[in-house]
Image (cartoon, rainbow, N blue to C red; front, side, top):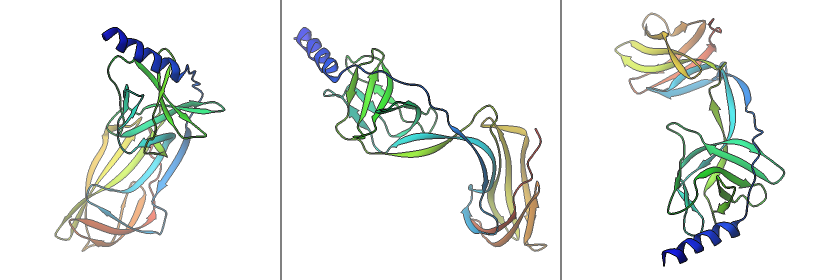
Length: 230
């Protein structure tokens, strides 16, 4: 019985066909300065009020719910992000992002170790590719294509985070990130008294506070950060 099962698995994988991959994708480097000047914004405690810097914007797919590939469900693609690694005329290729937002590929039963996800450009079908270049595919997958910011060796970001209000005073947290790692020397909490002025500033930024509570803040950005030196 076990021998028959092994033969069945082999036939399923063999009939799925061999697959080759292309690793030729390079993400775009993007400059960010958010939000737009003079726009009125509302954010909540813990959200970014200002964000400026440079990062790599990577093509990705976001799988909304777990999906199995193969007749016997040999590979399970869990919910989360998968980054693009390459493409050719017919296919695109993706791998798990890694980290909190990442999906995972779970190998079940006697299936071969996983190597990469293949997306068919024409049909949109997702397939799991094994280390032996054999493909097993999903019948249907709930996913969408997105852009995902990825830190690189020259990534740098400045952010100002709303931390809440006590009396007439509002609190902010300023952060600088280099290569997606918070820099301890550039990690600071600041406080502003709105009874003195509705215009606040930090690191070259200027912000007009329209309304502030301990839950949210409504504001207009007059000027974003000056680029920090590092």
